[in-house]
Image 1 (cartoon, rainbow, N blue to C red):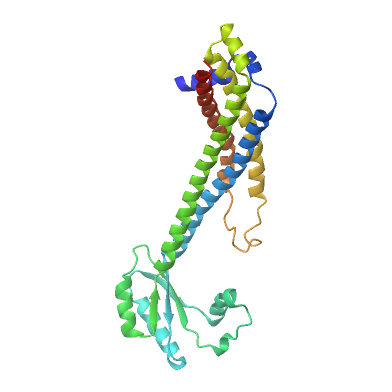
Image 2 (image 1 turned 90 degrees about the vertical axis):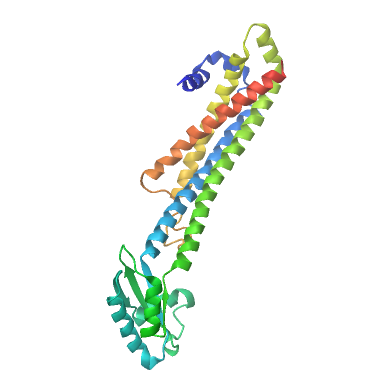
Amino acid sequence: MKLRQKIALRLLGDRQSDRVVPPSGHTAWLTTFTAGAMTFLAVFALALSLAAGRMADRWSEALSRTATIRISAPADQLDLQTRAVLDLLAQTPGIEAARALSDQEQRDLLDDWFGPDLPLETLNLPRLVELTETGSGYDAEGLRQRLSAEAPGAVLDDHTRWRRPLAVAAGRLNLLGILSMGLILGAMAAMITLAANAALAANAQVIRVLRLVGARDSYIAGAFVRRFTFRAFGGAVIGALAGTLGVAFLPATDAAGGFLTGLGFTGLGWLLPLLLPLLSATTAFFATRAAARAKLQELT
């Protein structure tokens, strides 16, 4: 509570002390522009982090309970081995459902990779069987051994080699978004510190006069803290609004060809960018206060 009261006093204190800080000049536009630009980038970093988390959950959910059995056999034995595999799966504990993909479904899968003009009817394609496991799961190693005995051409793919890299990649993207947020706030704090130091140095003579007439360093520092915090807040509001609009107007999933799938906010997540101006103002407050204290001691 004491910290909140100190911050409130710094921001809502004697407005006359604001005259110590130059109302315009390079420190004014530098602070506003830096806060706006960094908040704009922070919106996209936040969207990336949230999208990566959703992507990881979606991929894990889609792959966690499914598996595929690939049956490679001569044409005269393919149907026989397919039926043997389906009968085996029907008797396997932990298997909820299993079905063989039709020729058209397999063609649709390959069309995405090779295009519609590939003469698939001339190729000896393996038969794919899709299975869905129950919540308790099944014994993958035991199923592999039974498949090798009942259908030598059948190979079980439980998607582990696909699921693990995708989950790791999504997790790293999420971490990258969080690190980007930290770097953005750090860069903002550094730029605001430089701007505050420049403003303090430019007003060194005014500060000496204020000290002569009895002004305390806390009074002088409060003027700089208040002015720079409000400048950063104003710039951050503009940056947050611009970034949110940019995310809102990203191409839809179908128009983006899947590359930007899920990049954006959903539900109450659209309110999260509204917190960034407050975070930017808080960063500016502490950065300016630290810079003012150090500079005023230097000017003693």
